Image 1 (cartoon, rainbow, N blue to C red):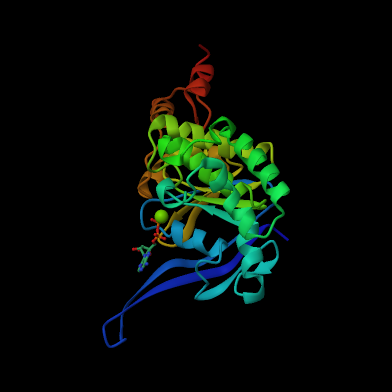
Image 2: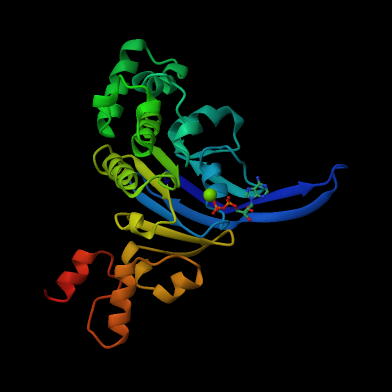
Length: 281
Ligand code: ADP
Ligand code: MG
C-alpha cells in the first residue's frame, strides 16, 4: 500500500445562513484518486482556489472527506483511534512561518513536537540536533526565532516537523511569503529531506521552478487532478498549463517558441542549462 492513497476523495464546504439553512456548497475536492509511494517527491501545482490546501488538510486529518476515503500509511484518516498516529506520520508545514514557531529559542521550538509525544529528554535533544542539521539551521540553535529571516524561520518549522520523525511531510506553499533567496534555501532543505532522509515529500506550490526535482507532479483545477506526470511531461504541455492559468517559466516558454519556429529542441525544457545544452552551445 502507498504512503498516501486517496479513492474518490471529495470535500464540500457548506455555507449556512443564521438559521442554519444551506446557502451554498463549494465542492473544493472532486472525486480525486491517487497513490503516493514511500520516498517519492510529489509536487502539487494549481492556481488559487483549485483545491490544493483542502486536499492537503485531508492528509493531516485536519479535514475529513465528505465522500470517498484517504489512507495515510494504511490508516483511514476517519478512524478516530488513529488520529495522532496519522498526524505524526504525515507532518504539515504551512505558508506563514510566524504562525508556526512558538518557542523563544530555536532548539526549544524544534523540541516541542517530540516533547508532546512523550519522547524521553535525551532522545529529544538528539532529534533536535539531527533535525536542525538536516535543514542547515544547527548553528542557529540558540537564536531567538524573531532574529531569523523568513527562509530561516521556515526551515526551523520544517525541523520542528522532522523532529517528530514523520514518514511524510506535506508543505502547503511553504515559500509563498519568502524572497527568492529564502525560497531557494527552503527548497534545498526539502530536497535534502527527501533524498538524504528518505522522507516522502508532498510540496504544494504555484512556482513552477520548484517542481523541477519532483518525481511526479499533479496539477489541480477545480478540485480535480487535471494533469499528472513527470516534470518534463508536464512542462512539455505549455498550452495546457496556460489554459490552467499557470505561469510557465520563461526558459520553458522560450524553448517552446523556438520549437514552434522550427528549431529541433527536446520537449519540456526546464532549466537555462538544459536549453544552453540543447542549443549545442
Ligand atoms: P487552493 O489551496 O488551491 O488555493 P483551497 O483548497 O484553499 O484552494 O480552496 C478550494 C475552494 O474551496 C475555493 O473555491 C475556496 O474558495 C473554497 N474554500 C476554501 N476554504 C474554504 C472555507 N473555509 N469555507 C468555504 N469555502 C472555502
Ligand atoms: Mg492554498
